[in-house]
Length: 181
Ligand code: URA
Image 1 (cartoon, protein in one colour):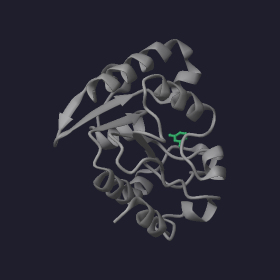
Image 2 (tube, protein in one colour):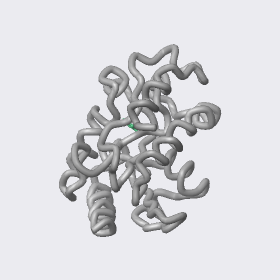
Image 3 (cartoon, protein in one colour):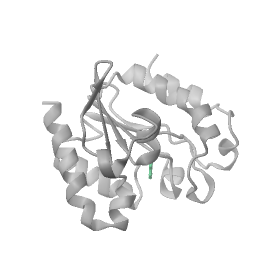
């Protein structure tokens, strides 16, 4: 199965109520044979309108910072979210929504088969890396598991809230780019 075929199936998904309020499904963006899969939380307003992940203010920051270390959606990475539909008012995804949506992400991981999975923010890091993952304490650690490397780091929205942490995210992304050389 290709990502496009999976996306067509995902567009029909009615497993949770978020499909009723969304404008567009935000399935993911990037190359099918990506070496790095970036996983965020859920679409926000801009993503919901455009149908693409990380295109709003924090998304632009993340995209710029990834490009600085040679990681680009048109070349070597794929970006997806834990949830494919926008939660109202950008509230945190509910556990039940994550449980219903995770299968789409698992299938994306199977198809892309990335060497590295980068979780940005607590929600995806705790779901994908470990339930007690602390972004503040464990960001930037390279965790090897099942033939892949996992890293959790700051969500770009958290960097916009506290710009002092930007060098920490920069350093993590640099380390990640080194790890796939
Ligand atoms: N925040 C996320 O976690 N994902 C997006 O796609 C946009 C903002």
